[in-house]
Length: 214
Image 1 (tube, rainbow, N blue to C red):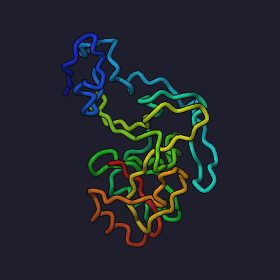
Image 2: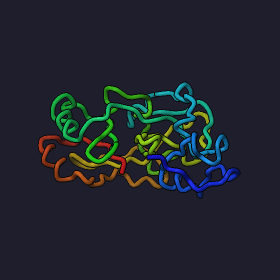
Image 3: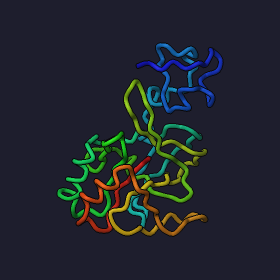
């Protein structure tokens, strides 16, 4: 299915673009704005990972920072990993990830998650903050779901990259070390649509967290 927006040549598919509002990228073959379309960030993405640096962030563990300024709304990096079923995710948490305290899961689609623990890029090292400078968004690109880390504001070179984690708790809340002025002190855990299945599958998992983007 091809989603044609109603923008006219000169509109550039800005904030009022219906596709943009629905988190759908325009198809360059049919978009009325043609080369002026600004709603093709995944399709026109130029590798920025060489400007991202993984570093030790103390109590927060590993973190991710940029060595180059980033403009607001920029797609910084795509969040990649292995797309697996929720059932497989639960099995891994009870087996190969049983001794791990931190892991990297993001909701991909109904009943599916992205597992970035073994197959992923540096996007997984972005830490949580109660005052984030980034966000995670899911977009439809040529009928496929793609997940990316986007800048919420202009970000200076040397700044650490943060986004607001959406957690489902397998145990107790975790202390937050973001250090922001409005830090709530702990990372709150949200119930997901798969609450019952997860609770049933994780009875023996204590003090461990499942990253969940709604």
